[in-house]
Image 1 (tube, helix red, strand yellow):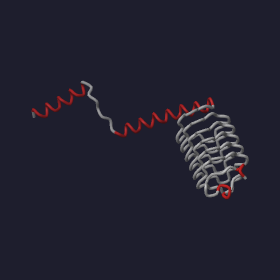
Image 2 (cartoon, helix red, strand yellow):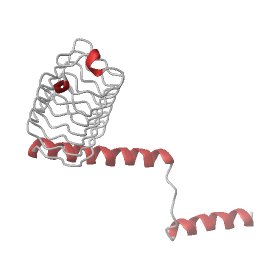
Image 3 (cartoon, helix red, strand yellow):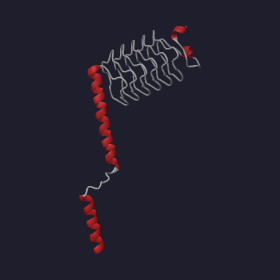
Image 4 (cartoon, rainbow, N blue to C red):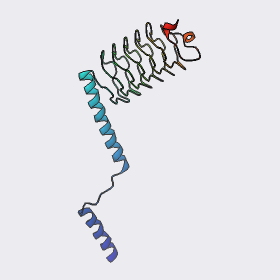
Length: 185
């Protein structure tokens, strides 16, 4: 009996002097998720209010059909973001990381996408008229029904594309090298 009283005393003593109590691992995960959600909400609010979010991290953000024409998102991380139907006319998206993003139906007319990573992105029905895609990575992107008329795509990586029913770019122009400019015709 003396041992059990000693053990109980030791436990109470530890609790009284503030020895750390280890929280379960799931509590850390929930706290991390809440912190990440708050950070993302703050950056999204800033983008929508100011039209600027240079080098920000909006990974997996649900932006949807926002009017962001002329927005400055240079170097922004939009990997896996839902940007379906967004209005990015004349937007600055140079070096933005948008791999795996959903840009279906997005309006990117006249946007600067120089050096942007659009690999594996869904650009189905997107308007890319007069956009600058120089040096961008479009490998594996779905460009079904996208409009590239007047777009600059020099030195862009166009490997493994789906260009079915696209305007301004064809599979014959892309060829096996995956490098083309529609101005090279």
